[in-house]
Image 1 (cartoon, rainbow, N blue to C red):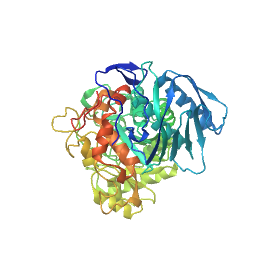
Image 2 (image 1 turned 45 degrees about the vertical axis):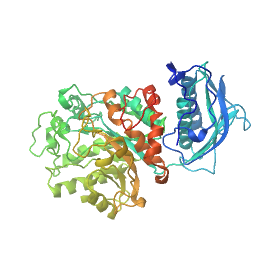
Image 3 (image 1 turned 120 degrees about the horizontal axis):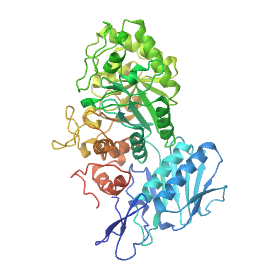
Image 4 (image 1 turned 30 degrees about the vertical axis):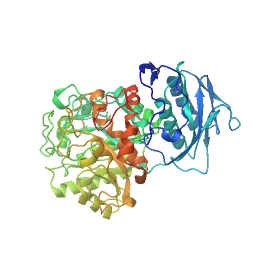
Length: 518
């Protein structure tokens, strides 16, 4: 099991930079057991060498290749290093292997996000085949730095050894619903920082729903000025300008997270229908909606203006979205006739393909013919997802009974809903996407995503209360191989992350399932 060493009674809590440290009677001994580090997700392989690397002075970061990606990454790492340790990490020219400092090196022997983190007594090296991989290695190193106990001078030491690691799934995501309640750019950035720590690499933004339209569309301006003016409960709502959205995209990219935009249609569209009467079959705009019912709205599938609207929306969003995916929604269109639903989804898929994106939709989209490579997001109906597979789609696993972050932890939880299931931290962790449904095998699974719907949450504090610590477990399911994962060991590692989560500003749920470190 993974645990902290040198835990001494009588410690008092002190703060230093972004680290939560402990000042104790007597000098803590430098850590030497890398295999006992409480890393989440758990690495594939750890070899410890029984020594320590001390950070007691300014150091340098060396780039094996002087690429633009590595330069930007070195700048980000240097900023974080300074915040975490109080010491500078100055960029330097290429150095010989082993020179004191941090070495970032691209290697042909590693592919994708795989990395090798080597911690010696004088130097640290992160090797990977891509800048993405080097960043994943940095995330492990950053966790080690945040988790270690400082000495009396406030300096930290790291255990030496080597970590070799690679992801289980290519897609490891979470969805944030900014439509039911609107979240500011700064709140979304804070969430991005938190999910990056756990090697999440996709953030799906649910940008439209009955209660609010949240992304500026320049060719249809009333979507935001009117459709974005409210939210669940009647709040003032809000929206992202295209410049705001691009800032979020850039911020996420710097942390190797890809934004996936979603415009939910043909249902969940009351905000759009209220903004433009011509999108309604009767030509009359409904009132804005601030409740939480679903399934009562639909675009008019038999009007040409509907598809001009969809084309304009997809075109403008795709132009500012560098990632490969565009999510068309497609769920809970209860008042849309089946033939109209199939017609609409088919045309929407064509429009997404026109703008060179891969279409994603909730599992109901299986009713239409699906271009090979389409992604069906399994949330409620396994037969829907398996039908999509038979039509050539890949599956993104988000079963509501295991992976919905908006579900309550238990019957006493204040925030959240319970229509799918109560999802304790253990329940959220203890399932295997590869084995959940017999008809959906590993070869069909793109990855895992944990959606956070926002009917009951209104700010960052609420958001992080429902997301954490469950999202740590979903991150481990997405990254670590099934044979490495076990609840008994995970809960001990998770217990060490209390100060880390607090240090990032997460108002996480202190579940009694875990004996949290003070």
